[in-house]
Amino acid sequence: MADRSTHLATNLAGIHSPNPFWLASAPPTNTGDQVMRAFDAGWGGAVWKTIGDPIVNVSSRYSSVDLNGVRMMGLNNIELITDRTPEINFREIAEVKKRYPKQALIASLMVESKREAWHEMVKRAEGAGADGLELNFGCPHGMSERGMGAAVGQVPEYACQITEWVKEAARTPVIVKLTPNITDVTHVARAAKRGGADAVSLINTINSITGIDLDNFAPRPNVAGRSSHGGYCGPAVKPIALNMVAAVAQDPAVGIPISGIGGISTWRDAAEFILLGATTVQVCTAVMHYGFRIVEDMIDGLSNYLDEKGLSSVAELRGRSLGTVTKWEELDLNYKIIAQIEQAKCIGCGLCYVACNDGAHQSIGARPRTEGRTDVWILEDQCVGCNLCSLVCPVAGCITMKKVETGRPPINWKEFQKDPEKHAYLKNPHH
Ligand SMILES: Cc1cc2nc3c(=O)[nH]c(=O)nc-3n(C[C@H](O)[C@H](O)[C@H](O)COP(=O)(O)O)c2cc1C
Image (cartoon, rainbow, N blue to C red):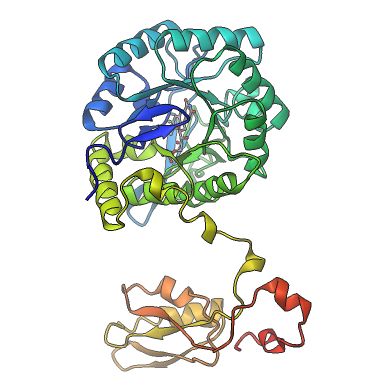
């Protein structure tokens, strides 16, 4: 078994932390008191709530999407950067750093797009003792209208330019935080690298309107009967974040470490980001929902998982899934699965039949039973192995997918294209 006191230790571009679990720049890192309580709870690092010229905020700032009783499946906010002065923030950073020298403390910065303004802020952050800097090029609302945040992160040339200015003054590692509100996130990641960034973090929040109140017609969160688009985060955004992290990690033109963010609530979520190339992970919504204590389970869970896999460090886990994320045309067209129903578990709800019949490939047979239940069975010759029935089935383990041995060697789309007639059987979806 690996040394449990050190095997979660992490080094992101020279920023060391006792574990890969960092708090993202957001309300949980607004004050020194919060960050110190978080470090006491076990968090390995914290990115301070973005510091810049203090702003004024609106009242009523957050709204959310619930899903079948699960609250805050997605969280939306129209909050801006810190509303406290840089003096106060830097004083508290110095205090926290003095008391917690081992944890990573990162200053998130956002200032107007002027070289001198960036130089000054960098010097103040480093003077306070920050271990690194995160440049907030991602805030999707409020700041972008002032030429900051996403307004910078959506234009590769600006992102490169500002990173260069920061690097002129910086002595500590510089992390560029990327916005997902862009067609191809790798363009800005490459620009950050060109500008000299030591690492990137992603994702910031996704532009959203979470809903409209049908009584008064106003979007949420309601600010005197009106609202504006906000930034979406929480469990709902994890799949988008994973895809973007993988895209950046696979891009040889980027090639710098990644701090993964977006919908992380458990050690399992964190492990997925690490498997796709993240060195550290950052958490916001889950802490806003459940508090700092969730990190205890994250530490235990990731430690146990490393032990189970026979790995002695987080670094050994990093990027292990990247080789399995390929282009569609490289997938094996001869790989075949079909659904199977374990009749003893079936409750006869008929949902798989309806979903398959109306929404997919008409591969399930059904017959009504007297007690209001439906008998269902797979039409194996028809089944294309799409997974839908197993996804809608409400009973765990009732519908699973089984591999069919076709005896045919793997073939991808490119190989198929070379001689379609030779593999004409592939044109039949039920081959
Ligand atoms: C209320 C709120 C305020 C935020 N403020 C900031 C901020 O000041 N700077 C920043 O870089 N990101 C900010 N974020 C974005 C988070 O740091 C993070 O990128 C995002 O919430 C995704 O992570 P999550 O799904 O774990 O919440 C904020 C998020 C929320 C919910």
